[in-house]
Length: 94
Image (cartoon, rainbow, N blue to C red; front, side, top):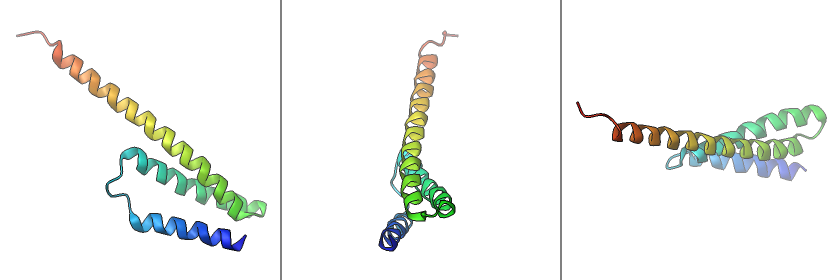
């Protein structure tokens, strides 16, 4: 189990070092959700007696949540842009 915890730490340090340059907003939200979920899961897991398992479960849940939130925000942005295009197209001539 100690080895598993070390692998998780190495994974997240690698993510932090690589940064978010060149990532889409959804990708950034997915990574952020995974990191936040792992931290929260590790905290809860430590209280329950298994920080590694809590971190893994939290990372999975956070990654899924971050991805879904990112897709939702993309959809909102597309709808906003479509509304702007429609409004510009139908402006009456003055």
